[in-house]
Length: 252
Image 1 (tube, rainbow, N blue to C red):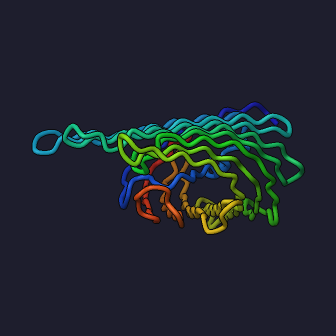
Image 2 (tube, helix red, strand yellow):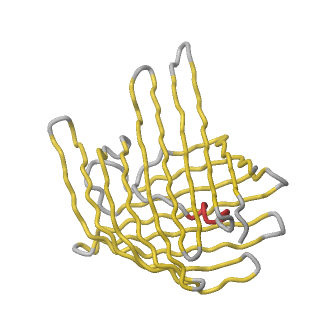
């Protein structure tokens, strides 16, 4: 395979509903560009208002993937900052390093992840785990995969300045990934994650994200919605939240 660089810049144009909350993140959208040896992506967007309302908001997304032989390494880093009238509402980050080893159309994977979310009162969340991803269908750019894995999570929540909640769990993770081409230039990626606390089956997390793309020559338009649900939050937050994003992606 020739050494081809793929560079993408993503600009988020609109987001509604709640800010990011439940702690599952999705890196599946990176896979659409991993036919190349090297994938690099960078995205930034912001909203700044002055006068009656002082609002500072920006998001930074960095991603890089390297593929060689049967090995694939991906790194993702996101940072979000929101301040309104000198009150910091969010100063959150997510970082994940993931390794895949291909066995035909199937994968063995491992990952480490770190995260902080002010909206969740989550001071940190550290994960380490791995699993197996099995391809059920793959033809003409369409595919359907399922995966199963296990990971260890260490979380620290801040109820208030004097009260902390430290949670350590092993979770079973079940996932499915679907890509359907609607036309030559349009397709949908859908990812579903279901995570179960192995010591308490009533403690589960669910994440659903369909993402629609329409590709032009070097520009792609996308619309994505994210739904997260945690059956037993560890602090006083809502069980379910959602997010809608509309953006442009430039491929050079």
